[in-house]
Image 1 (cartoon, rainbow, N blue to C red):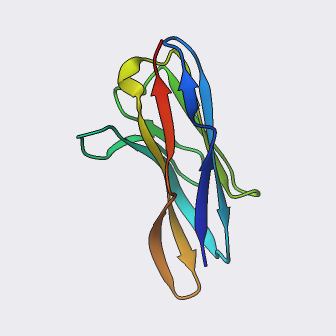
Image 2 (cartoon, rainbow, N blue to C red):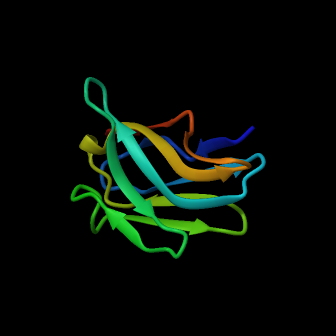
Image 3 (cartoon, rainbow, N blue to C red):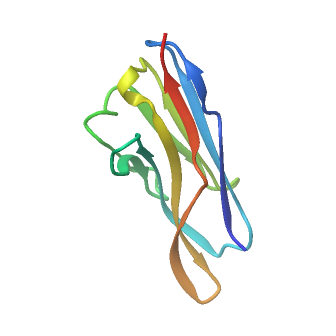
Length: 119
């Protein structure tokens, strides 16, 4: 059974930094696009950043210039370095991956990790 497990969330002051990590476990044949999404209280889940197997990345306007997504294909991990954090970055952050398991492609999600930006 494939699982995505996030880590690295927490409480940080405005202007601070955090790095989120997501590890993939289970029997995977291939992993294509991986990404990070977030959901703030009372809001819909939104895309933060994605990265292809070849490490081509895409960022939302909110993340551009402050966040950096990266991945390690050998370790099947994806990370999100977040700098210059703002209170509006407060949300639960979810890892996502498009994974091929024997017989089918599917989208997988982690359980989420809380990021709180507050003084």
